[in-house]
Amino acid sequence: MMNGLMKMRKRMMAMSLLYAFFVTMQLTESEAAVMDKDIQGTAVEHNWVEYSTDIKEMEVDTHDITYWKNLMRYTRTCTISHVIRTVVYYCDIHDHTKSETFLDDVIHSEKHSH
Ligand SMILES: [Zn+2]
Ligand SMILES: [Zn+2]
Image (tube, rainbow, N blue to C red):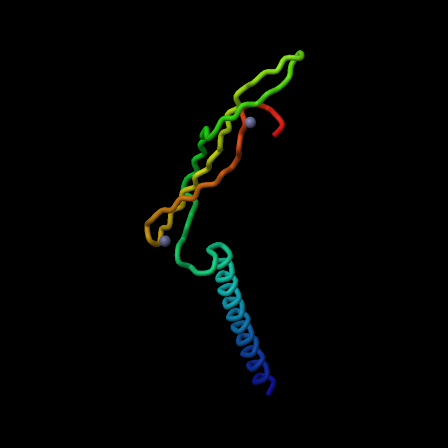
């Protein structure tokens, strides 16, 4: 009688352990799916990974600025530059690349109020 109960308890333990293991596995799987969704957006179509970043400064425009110094009026030319960042992404699923450009900064060569 006692033996039978012990055996049943052991079996129950094993069953619940197996069940716990199974539930944990399922949780980890769904967690991974959520994480994939977060990183990749809506659908897992591409695996875009940042491949390289290139920062360029380009002169795009000039404008004249006037200022007063010792009761004299001066004119100076200010050069406007755009800092452009180009990021190249690589997708190893389809073996292709894409690039995105961002305007990081606008620089005026002369310090002046706009
Ligand atoms: Zn792709
Ligand atoms: Zn300027």
